[in-house]
Image 1 (tube, rainbow, N blue to C red):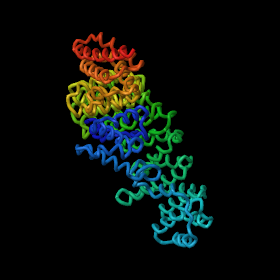
Image 2 (cartoon, one colour):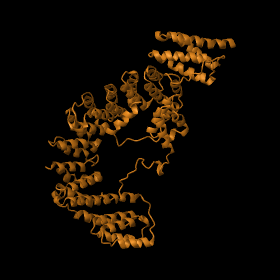
Image 3 (cartoon, helix red, strand yellow):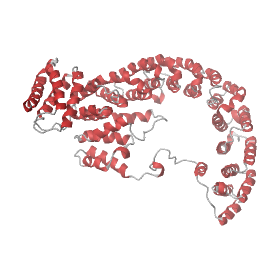
Image 4 (cartoon, rainbow, N blue to C red):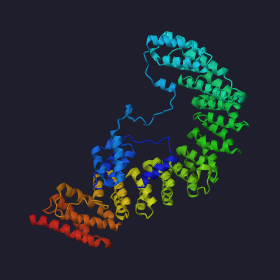
Length: 636
């Protein structure tokens, strides 16, 4: 029950741009969840509904009928959860299959970006005439609004409209010029004129003096506007534009003394990417500038140069990793991973010394960068394991101590080659009792994928019977990543034993729900959850009630499959003996041939039970099985 709240809190700290909800569950998850929804216990069904809702699967798996019994529950929390999901099912999806607040909705999207997505609009002739008149208004804002309105015509624009906009490429207002260029590009017209106008603006750009305050911010905004239009018009890779950008980077007035120019130019150079490579000889010296801000913006500009130039840029950044300026050193460690795996042979050895600097903010950033380099940083696995075992002991700014958590997540990103080395260590740290660390380890396993399952699952299963509630929670969440994917009866017995050992009702119901999920790979194992593991409502028919032949076969087959693997779990074996006895006693007539064969196999197993604690229960079960077989002999 603790697992979902723990994950929700942890995600506040360790959110990832790659986080996403699956559009529908995997087949084994769906089978397991549907079985949980059919369980007699409302608490088990409520856990299943909560999981389905949190994953965004409600419309796929749930109907109002599934929720009706939960809405009548005396438990207020169950009713609340069911009502919340029912509301989601009733909500009308927005176009595109998303609710209005769904992913991809950007309330701050610029007017220009919105206009690019609009379909061309037919503008009435009288409205066109009015807008053309407004293009000559004294107010630049009126002219700009008229340009944007004409731009909505897109490919439906007339030659009169496009000719009028071309004239505005000479407008004294930079905003009007940029809006006109964007509108013309949307019309598919006058590319050469747009290029010439934007290049002219770029050449003429000068930062305003520092003392002009607010006006300087307008100067930055204007430059940023030019870059936006160039990008929207697919002009950013033009050699003439790139040469002008490099000119600004090298100009001590334009780049060194204006923070706004530095931000705009470095962001734009990132967008250019590998096409900036021929100009590296002009840009790399900026990394040695005496001004730390110039160094940092030059670094930002060079982070996306592509694989060919990445090692060269990485070597040029090494002095910044050793800078006496804490801010420069910290930010370089934070961003250098963006050069990509091609730079790893240079970057990884340079970041490793940071891992030994305990209680240093740069240590955390270096750990995260190593993880984001992915398998290319695999040589750092042992050093990251050392961080896992020796975390920081004092707060580092507002970050408290997350070096250990970051190291766990980084280890999960290093690729399949390190999985055998790091998985046992990660599972061992589940026992630390740190909720945030547990979440990070879970993220690491998720990132490793099925390669981690053979080691993570056997290590997690024993924790289900741990006295530490938090260790059990993280074991549950680890097992939920893959479930019983090998359909292993020994796996199933170990998991069922966790339910047999549960002492708290909350633990028991959450574990029973989890068992359904984990068992979804195999129909027989799904049946074991309903029949074993201390179900809240006993599904066994009352003594004397008859099973159908199919039910007799299914239950006995499942118990036969699990019995040999229950030897290490006396409490579970004792429960199984009771179920076998009940099943045998419910066969009040002569069993069918197939059922009789199963009873004979079970009879042999019960006679040879070597577990002393369960021998009395096995003897009773054996007697019931023997009686059922005797009825068949009597029929003959």
